[in-house]
Structures are given as C-alpha cells and as structure tokens.
Length: 78
Image (cartoon, rainbow, N blue to C red; front, side, top):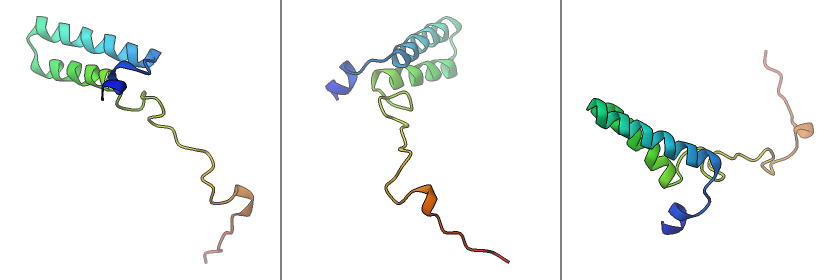
C-alpha cells in the first residue's frame, strides 16, 4: 500500500489530486456535503492510484493470443 501511494506519480494523477483538493476547499467554503464527497472521491483516486489514470489501469492488449484477425471464420446466418 505504501508503495502504491508514494510511487508512480504521473501527470494525470497530480492533476486529479489538485482538482480533488480544490473541490474539497470549495465544499468547505460552501458547506456542501455532496461536493465534499466528490472532492474526496477525486483525491482518494489520486492518492491510492485508482481508476483508469492508474499506471496500466485501463490497458487492454490489442492481441490476446487467440489468433489473428486473418484467421476468423464466419458462419452464414439465414
């Protein structure tokens, strides 16, 4: 867990942290709980490296090893 928090900081992760802190500050000034929850969401995603901006979070390989696109067999439907 400590490794996930302190390592692999990327630009999108830093931006999410800054946006989350700004939203939390705005929620405190406006006394709005729902905005505070949204700010906590963005901040926790950045701190714990969760979501698609995590290193390799939404990566899906282009080839899955099941064969190439040239060897696809189609069945004719009537």
